[in-house]
Amino acid sequence: MNNSLLATPGRKFGAPLAALFLLLMGAQFLLLSVGTRQVMLWIVGAALGVTLYHAAFGFT
Image (cartoon, rainbow, N blue to C red):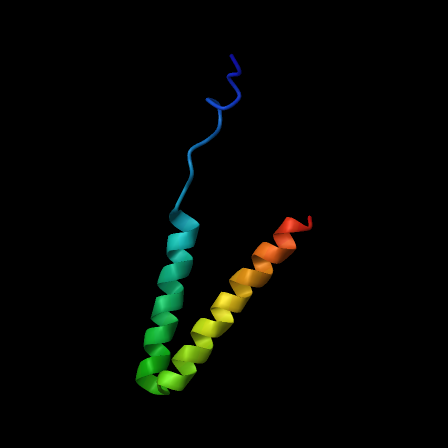
């Protein structure tokens, strides 16, 4: 029996939750100070950033 699968560390959700929190707080700030269009651009930019991160991660 292969014990290497049992020795893998547990997944930590701290960094993704912190990033999501900061993204939502930025969207809330933009909604209150600028408007809906800027919030939509913020969300599209974040989605494109995640896409580029995962695309670059696959080639390393």
